[in-house]
Amino acid sequence: MLVTLSSALEQGLLYCFMVLGVYLTFRVLDFPDLTVDGSMTLGASVCAVLIINGASPFLATLAGTASGAAAGIVTGFIHILLKSDSADTNYGPKLISGILTTTALYTVNLRIMGRSNIPLLGETTFFDKLGSMLNVRMVHWPLVATLAVLAVIVKYLLDWFLHTDLGLSMRAIGDNEQMIRSLSVNTSVTRVIGLAVANALVALTGSLVAQQQGYTDIGMSVGVLVAGLAGVILGEAIFGTRSVSWVLFSVIAGSLVYRTLIALGLRVDWIKPTDLKLLTALFVMIALGAPVIRRKLVKS
Image 1 (cartoon, rainbow, N blue to C red):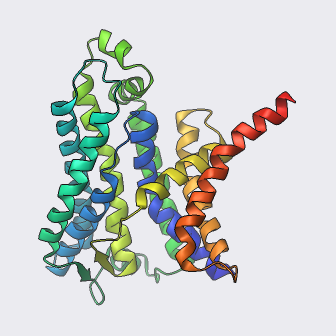
Image 2: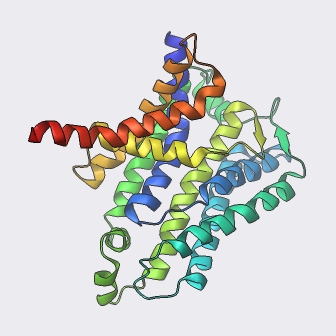
């Protein structure tokens, strides 16, 4: 049971950066960004290729993260080209820009890797390097503790960023874009920066997951956007959204809860690994329905 719990927490912490990226686009920017399915694999493929070619795993992880930021910038520029009105209340250009980028990234990722998957067994990874520096074997609870520290660092950096002038402008775009335009803020540039930051977080998850599981695969991020939304919705439903600082912790906790529920669900004899997508859909439905049911019970 402890091994199952540590594995669930490990997965939750690995994917929490992706969930933070999804929160930035869907909640802060009000931008349904579908680039996630491509940028996560992009980060993993760039990181893996650099590692097998002898690069430092720290630099490879940083490069993988930066490649995700580049993907977000591409999505932002496509959106600027496609949007047709100043208010930009139509979700069409936002959806299409993400779809175009993630579609193109499938070919880009194959070009980067040169094949459909790259094994990293026998290569020195980020976790191997960090483990040797700390003189500890990065498995189970030591790995969970390391990822937790990294998650807290990223959380506070993101918290600081969202309280800067640029971050406040980004939050205002999601709340009332017309108002922030009236204050002479360039919403297009601000949105591009937000998409870059969000997809950098997604690519960071891809880089870390590839090194943790020992390979990168062209299909490793299929459906990951739904898992990201599940983490965001579960976190907000369970822990609330009292402030930006609090909701960032809620989102990370939501990722942990989601992965723990999946791990516990798969331990049930009559649930098979092929039922994972169904479990995800059920968890999201429950998380979405819980606040509505709670409000109705309070009124009654």
